[in-house]
Image (tube, rainbow, N blue to C red; front, side, top):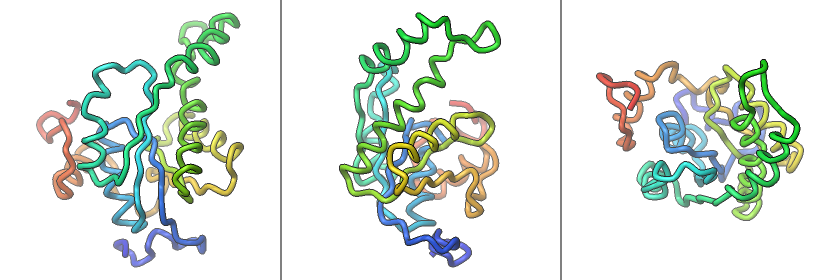
Amino acid sequence: MSSNGTNGNDNGLPPVKKVVLAYSGGLDTSVIVPWLKENYHCEVITFTADLGQEDELDGLEEKAIKTGATKAYIRDLREEFITDFIFPSLRASAVYEREYLLGTSFARPLIAKHMVEVAETEGADAVSHGCTGKGNDQVRFEVTTMALNPKLRVIAPWRDPLWTIRSREDAIAYAEKHNVPIAQTLKSIYS
């Protein structure tokens, strides 16, 4: 049970059994793995999109497993990202406020699409992400998920009343308590 005894399901929805988490291996998504297990008592599978991060992906599968995931998917989406998202946006001169290329925002629906595919393959009943709610990334993940598979529940920890982590320091303390391998420390909160 979670700290409030609800098993993460206090809203009357059926219990979550298996979640696919959009996983970068950073501080937030690394602590979300054990948090989901602790609060929803579910299996957690991670999904990482290879969009060209190169050595940032080294050891990511092992890290996800050490963090508590039962499986870790890393999919090479570089060609699809360039062909179906980047090239069309360049042809359309897609920029935000006349200076920001939209590459990051375009990646979110692609990541969500493949995360939904993994969820369907694995028989998951939910997906999750580490978006903090400060931008539109959460909207891009969730709208894409609902459009592709409205039966999948979306767990957004930063909006969940069970989520008590409110700062990087809180996340580091949680990681240390749960033996989550992270590069950050309280002396160096940004790895």
